[in-house]
Image 1 (cartoon, rainbow, N blue to C red):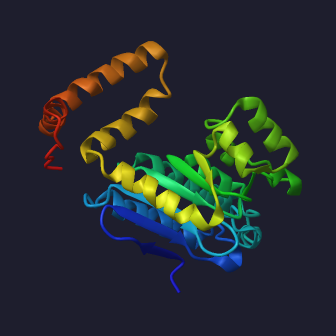
Image 2 (image 1 turned 60 degrees about the vertical axis):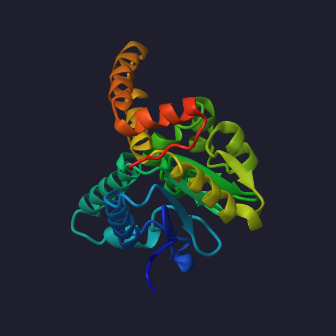
Length: 261
């Protein structure tokens, strides 16, 4: 049984974490499978959007604590293993945002610790009613420092700090209000909502979405003046593309565009 399944055809790829007995924990194997699949999809020009979900009762319960405990048996108490683990996890999260296709998290059950980090890292997220989110490592004495990076870039700092220091959970509706997820869907409609959103994104000009995603994450780290200068240059390059010229002409002619990409 594959730990990560790829489903879907055409412009939307569906990645399904498939370790339900471990609540789809981000084990060494899961991290490698996710990173490899994202690398492959990033090179596939036929794919325009990705939906990431999990089999079983949960989306993702964070790092695999059994593997982490086993790592303590090393001579250094696990220091080298832990550093490598968190570096590999950060690299996988970074790949989600550096790949050209938007990635949509399809979330149900629970998304905790690094699982909540994964939701916050994805470009968009749809959650089922009843889903619970938490960065609850503090409850076992492990502050969710790396999940904090993505979480604090999604929601307000005071609420993020409260979640991190108390280990309390929020429900899907609260997650939507705070900006952690885009919308909440009935459980029976969760997959169709996520795929519909992915298909809508996939219907747009792929080159425009690609340049837009890259620019989105670049400019958000810049001072406002620098961000405007940078995105102005991006707009110029986008305007010079042949397909963009066709899109504008089609709009003015009140017809559907014929794009090459």
